[in-house]
Length: 106
Image 1 (cartoon, rainbow, N blue to C red):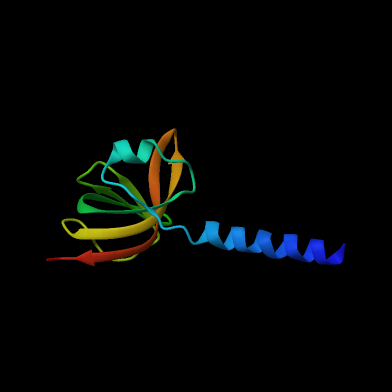
Image 2 (tube, one colour; image 1 turned 30 degrees about the vertical axis):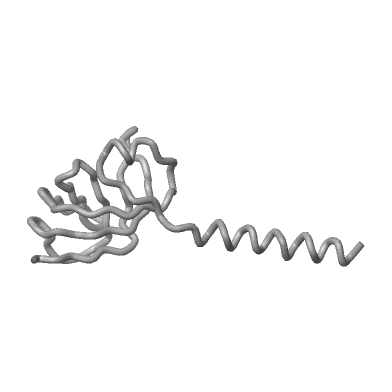
């Protein structure tokens, strides 16, 4: 019986590790974001067209109408950025919480 429990536990850990390592979904605009579930990992890019400072960081609006929330310093208005983040919802509107961001002033 212990062997069966051990095999089931190992199999469960393999399934969990596979689920955690799934590649993020590439999105191109707000329509793609609306179809996703909360806490889903996404990758997106775009030009920052507006930037607001809030207590815990910044809210960035991209040219593809996606809103980003980041705990970041610096100014990004007018820059092209690439973002890895997770989908969250605020006031029934989906937005992306930034996990990693690369800016290119290009």
